[in-house]
Length: 382
Image 1 (tube, one colour):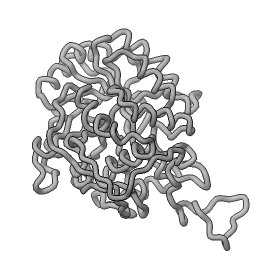
Image 2 (cartoon, rainbow, N blue to C red):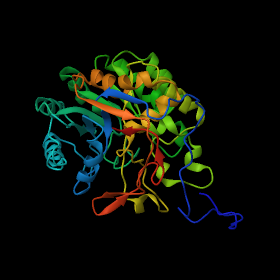
Image 3 (cartoon, one colour):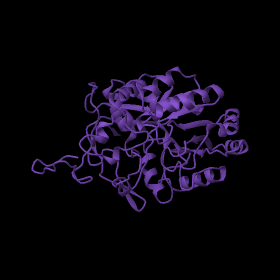
Image 4 (cartoon, one colour):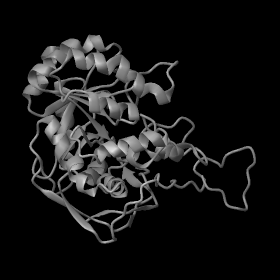
């Protein structure tokens, strides 16, 4: 939050969101390409996207379908998508909400998921897989994030379902944080790796697993060391920002997400992994829209909205790291490979040309504030 030089509020912060601007992205990388540079990629996929429900879905799809050929649709709705019938109904709602001129699967395909619970059965897994539309199950530790209260309380209770997933070839997507009142929010991911991930991977050596939206150096190092069936998604906001963006100069609610932004050493580790060309790391935006009034409040929702410019923001991060030649693999190839999907044959062109992001977008009957709202993104879709 930036105060006018004439306005001083000693011993207090500015009123919430008064003259509040996004801090600059962490700028420790010095690489740059000339303005006007153009690159062409195979159409990217997003392996972690929140489309929400009801009248909000068309507004999200209008932005997401411009940038992605496929997207994993998160199941943490109210009520959650816990069975095959709910997943297929949600898919139908998404298809009916596609923008005019966008067809499935030629222009865009939603990849459906089930919300894993303590009582998900092996039979339900087999039924879901047989549809051909449900590609994964999402493991939310109970209480870890938005609408996760129905999530897993004990990983061992999910083992019958996980065994069936391994047998039929469904992917397990994991929000990789432990919860509990004694666990520091900045330590949740590291503890999850030791307490849950390592035993889980040992018990299911053939199960395809994705640690979603990793946020720490510990997670990066674990993914490097894990067997080939374990991969990870990384968001554009975790590549571009550290926890200073959330906390320095006043609390910036539109940077509040789970897993929370970490210190700079972790961001650097994530960026190095993303731009390494290692196929274990791929794009998953975790674009998570919430109505602006539910973010700018005394107890705001967790989530950063990036559907409006995620691929362009990834390009910013990769450019700064001198890794634009690795962008296509990260955004367009490695996730599809991990999920056993064919790579997209359509292409998308990006140009280094700045554009100003609207301060808000419509979101059903509300507004949603995007990342960089009212400010610029340095890359554009041609």
